[in-house]
Image (cartoon, rainbow, N blue to C red):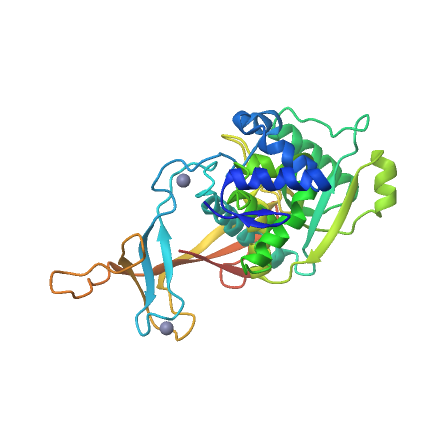
Amino acid sequence: MSSIWTPSGYVSTMEAWREAQEKSRATAPMYPAYVRSILHLEEYGKYFLEHGFVFGSNQNPSGPECGKIFRKIECSRNRDHHPSFRHIHCNDPGCPVCYPKYASKHAKHVTQRVLGYKTVYRKKKMFHLIHWAAMVGGEHRQYANISEAMEEGKRLLEIMGVEAAVMWYHPYRIRKELKPILRRYRRAKGLDGKVGFWTMAHDDVLGLGGLEQYVIYAPHWHSIASGYLLNSSEFFDLTKGAGYKKRRYLETPETIESVAYYISTHAAREPGKHSMIYYGNISYRKLACRCVSDMLVPVLCADCGSDMYEYDVDEEGQHYRNAQGEMMGPLRQVMEKKKNYVYWIRGEEQPNRIDGAQCLISEK
Ligand SMILES: [Zn+2]
Ligand SMILES: [Zn+2]
């Protein structure tokens, strides 16, 4: 079990944690909501059932194998050149260990389409946008399902004047009182400042019992968007209380992919429904796309440009050896698919595959 933060230091058991809470409550109740949540662990899942599921929202991994290392990828010239591992995955998007697989799949798709959009609308800058709906009688509005929430999100994008957007729905935010605790945890563990609150919540680093204990219903939408927006006070008046925040511009494929990835890690999901939608000029109805070439090419080491090889390894990431103690050979060379796509405005003439602006996508 990972250590748990308390106002007087880290402890390693639930008992010690409760004791520390009792002590701190005697002086000043530092985190009253935090204390309350732990007492309702037996009802895990009720809150998600009421307000919607997100990626990785199950309390436990689907199986004991989830996340185990089984393959290692190494540079053929120097095995210390950024080696990476492959993990065993179940196919459950609710699995708190395996959900990143879905998030990165979504992020790759979004990056491909946004880059394609930019080959057609060259002057358009993309930015990260967050928006929310007006409260109803001082309360957050409830949505019957993900489709209803998406419809409301799109309606607000239209009022704002967004021209194109990839949009996700987030039913929850991380509880305010936990943010300083998570920040302290991150510092104490020497974790990179880029490790997000949601990553720590998915991993239940405070040992509260699962993701559900970290969140509160606060519906909002995230988009990677373009367009000139209506000013926020007019937007507020027109919608009787809705709001938006324009975050940073996303200039490179890497920033688009990393923002799309993080947004996807805690997006709403429903079986058979899309967790993100393309709106306006980037929608399937308005932006057409065709793959014009498809090649298999070797993946090269980022440090020295040599070929990369994949090996079978044990759970510790150690190479298997034969009876003579020699390392077993590689399974295969690592290759990736490189695809070229052309994009055009549906209804207009399809660009020539040589002259048309192309967008190169890699799939491992
Ligand atoms: Zn899993
Ligand atoms: Zn290398």
